[in-house]
Length: 411
Ligand SMILES: *Cc1c(COP(=O)(O)O)cnc(C)c1O
Ligand SMILES: [Zn+2]
Image 1 (cartoon, protein in one colour):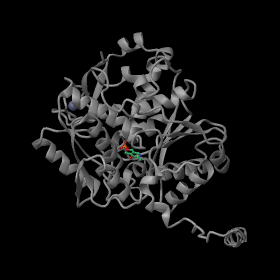
Image 2 (cartoon, protein in one colour):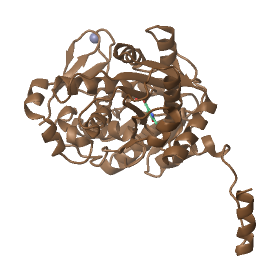
Image 3 (cartoon, protein in one colour):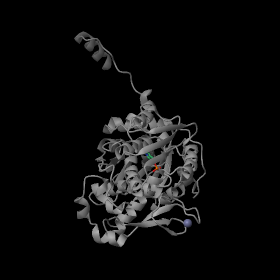
Image 4 (cartoon, protein in one colour):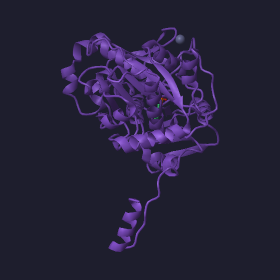
């Protein structure tokens, strides 16, 4: 059914069977999915995609399943919004927001990767799924495991936002809070995965999981009327999404679905955890791991798995990377809410804050087509902005009381 042929080492090119494995045994390079693009080219066209379901599965021929997807059938096809009001504030006429914080089952872009990973784990015959998460992956995996009737073990840093804890536990997942940061949780999970026969979606299933991210940029291109944007700003944690944005652009070009894509790709990080953008700004091509300290917990990964490739895709595309401090993140969350009516989480504040900097630096021109990636929902990180908001006004149940309040509001 599917067109995924196997896995291949990104570094030495060695080929592997389709297995739950993510590292090359010879050079320790990351494994990625290899497709039969000639067969895909013969089958896939703009028209065939447009005739598909209104979900990420309209691109299923470019996803690594052998059979039909079995969970997350409604993930994807999130709105692409022309942000005229925010554009006016920033000095852009052609600004678009890809809003993955709505429509998806757990309100973040992680539903894309999890839908693929859990369907793949079932194909492999696993009965238990697991992950190391900064929050959104926890929510998504818990929900999709429930749908798939699989057991789930979910490992998070013990200090993540309460909204993300509640939205994991509600699905009946086994949630393990680890007293450490994400990088320590992830290291522990690699060790656990050697001892338990579980599908760790972002460890041993990672090559398949990652490709779910490609649908984010596929949708952007299709929603723009089959054209690639001039610029795209992407929030970066482990660099899975940003590298798959580059891969998706290349694939659509190779398949003749778009003319040559000249999209510049920009990494956005929080200054309190910016290993990728620091390397880009310093002109280095290696990652110096950092200890995260930021309110943008969902993207607080100090030693990103694909960070090296994240730097490369920005540089090779002619893009750049920058970061913003926590106050800018909060202010940018409010700016987006007040101009476009979109309440994003801290990672979205990072994207908008960095977009603003890139415009100020003259990297994005007034009439060029720019896309900002809104990847998570603000309801899950309310504590980040709560202290910044004006007080509400409480009144008695009388018209007089309201009149007094009204006078106060307009004073
Ligand atoms: C996970 C996540 C990202 C990006 O993560 P990568 O590991 O770089 O793919 C971006 N935004 C949000 C809200 C996330 O949860
Ligand atoms: Zn290798």
